Length: 156
Image (cartoon, rainbow, N blue to C red; front, side):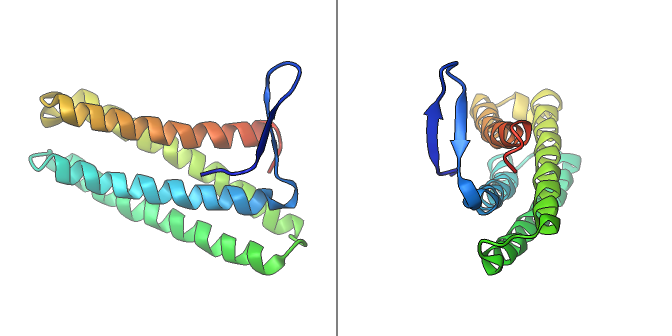
């Protein structure tokens, strides 16, 4: 999870202070959440053995796409660690692009979850599966909220 010092200002807005650790922290966070989303594609397929083939295929494709993004986060973590305290502007820009991409990817993944909830008969027929899918959705939304906060405050 995102670690750091949280303080509330006079207007009760949350501020993040990470100094030179920010790129590494958000890369760790991104890697963690892409791993979670990837595992969630497996959970859904295992939880709903009679899931319609188009959804099974879509979740399998998402599993691969999320793995690729997770691997990209890993490569950037290695680059930032090797850079020490002197991370180039070019690498910082690439990190920002990756984080923005990951945000959009999570938004699209949430779209698939919404589609599952509204269009899949086996999902609609099972309150337990619906609860799990809603939980998975909230977890992706949590990551999206962190990224949006960081990007809106230009902390990355």
